[in-house]
Amino acid sequence: MSVCAVIMAGGTGSRLWPMSRAGYPKQLLPLLESTTMLQSTFLRLADLPIESSITVCGEEHRFFVAEQLRGINVQSTIVLEPEGRNTAPTIALAALEKEAEDPVLLVLAADHVVQNHQAFSDAVVAALPLAESGRLVTFGIVPTEPQTGYGYIERGDEIGRGYRVNGFKEKPSLTLAQDYLDSGDYYWNSGMFMFKASRYLAELQTHRPDIVSACRAAMQSKGRDLDFLRVGSSAFAQCPSESIDYAIMEQTNDAVVVPMDAGWSDIGSWSSLSDLSPKDGDGNTVIGDAKLLGSENSYVRSEDKLVAAIGVNDLVIVSTKDAVLVASKHAAQDVKQITQSLMNETRSEWLFHREVYRPWGKYDTVDAGERYQVKRITVNPGAKLSVQLHHHRAEHWVVVSGSAKVTNGDETFLLSENESTYIPIGVTHALENPGKIPLELIEVQSGSYLGEDDIVRIADNYGRS
Image (cartoon, rainbow, N blue to C red):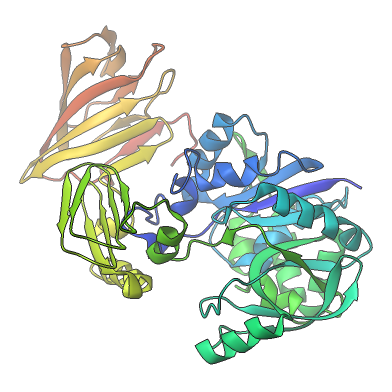
């Protein structure tokens, strides 16, 4: 029987702010390895009998996901969720897409760390016969400590190379977590699953037919958009939001847990990332340009500037281009409250970095003031910005490196290094990189309003409105 990997790549990872933000979340970041968490998820499948894959992500992340998969030469069907509806509907979309073939689905989150790939593969292979026989498998992480941040799975009688699930337990108190650890009958709930597509849909039809109905309607109105599979937004909006644990795994009589001892973590906070990171003799993790003096057990990460820390202990210090986080390791999980506050105040730092990625490249807002803004723009080889105009701003472009093909009103021409052009308010324009190296240019905007919503797109290679 064939196996299809289903990679859930949604979510915002708000507890890892300011690195992870809603517009560019943790699954797209290289937090522990040179590859991003999404890429690492696919790479650990290399030794498994995976014949196809589906990646489910949000509309706003689609180009980042596609580019990262191309970067590791992975072919995957990318299904776009119009909005987040938790894991039960996400998996339903993938199961419906594969309903005719009815493979075994290996369901994984794109933002987990697995340090021991062989142990991971062994657990998946052990689970395959159970899934093929119609069981709904969840992978239980062998606990190493009385962890209060995870839910637990209680095992029952042995079945194959797994155990019947006796029950799912909510995040426990420390005392209860210690009891779970001492008993040897409990595992951490990993959020990884394996089952046949037909079995999942059948169980969902039994326990949550409303989810099946909404997802079927959404898939019936699906359509191709470039490299993406876009499901019907109005139908999917009617789908209830529910996790697979509540919708299926806690209801079914066929749940089985297969133990996995593979150095797993869901990287739920800066503290958990610190625990997994290499440390010096004082227990510090230092990433980027940082100097520590008389400091212990701290995690210091700088993306763009020198950070100096003197006499600090058990701190998390993270510096990006537009934000600095300083937190006690013991309170690092509360970062989410900061992002919620930023959202409530309609500040952009919860959503975007100063350096913003686009399907054609990226831009960095170097400076901004009243009636002006300066950006450094990078356009990937062969990429093109939309044909557009602005009602409230004019723009000056100066090429720093590479070659630019510019449309400015009725003219189209090439610009090389140190050459420039001026685009008045209301003039249709476009920018393209016809070369083989990245195009770098400085854009100076001036006008009464400089917001990103003052863009009237006339034509776009990426299907944006």
